[in-house]
Image (cartoon, rainbow, N blue to C red; front, side, top):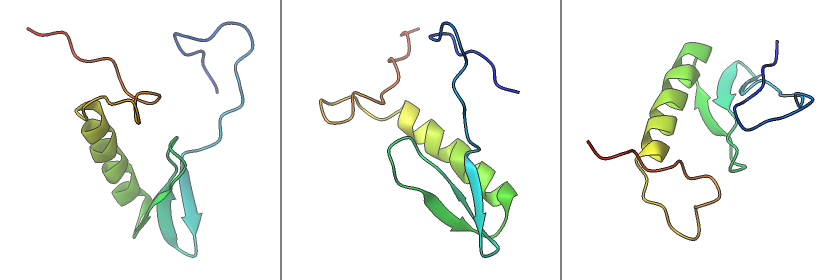
Length: 76
């Protein structure tokens, strides 16, 4: 079931699954347009996705990547 994201109003857009299985190999889709994989199992793809997101959250913001950048963490 789709849920609203905090920035969405009105109708919830259709969202496809992020994980793909092609020829017994698993991939995950990225917003940036390049799928990651292959992985031997969906579990491996899920773990790799978590690592990928963690890496992006710590990636410095530049003009080239600012469209997908997260807001910087508030300093403690």
